[in-house]
Image 1 (spheres, rainbow, N blue to C red):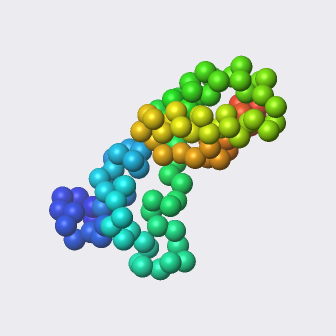
Image 2: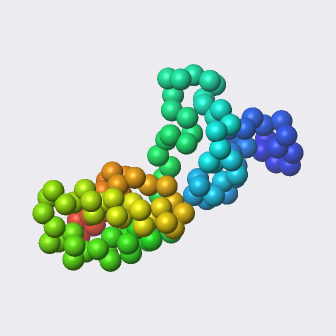
Amino acid sequence: MFGGNNENLGPFTQRLMLPQHPLHLLPGAGGSSGSGLGGDDEFPKRDERVPPWSNQETRDFIAIRGELEIEFSSAKRSNLKNLWEIVAARINERGYRRSAEQCKSKWKTLINRYKEGV
């Protein structure tokens, strides 16, 4: 079914068959080539959906967050948003596309998973 010639497969199936790389490294991931799902505005475009975090991206994220541990532990609640903005800026400097809110959510998920395993 999927062997050999991929010319007859649709673009969605072809993309599924690509090796798993962060979406920012995939060909055409940053373009505006009208990549909606069948042109239906009801569904988000590919670039608007949140791609999963790769293992390397997660390692980089933990390292960045760790560099700011002292600031996070001593910050007042009103300053936390600024710190997450710094984390997002640093992760974006490494070539990933993450918002401060995505970084904050990922950190909470990591902490919760750690607590479940302990």
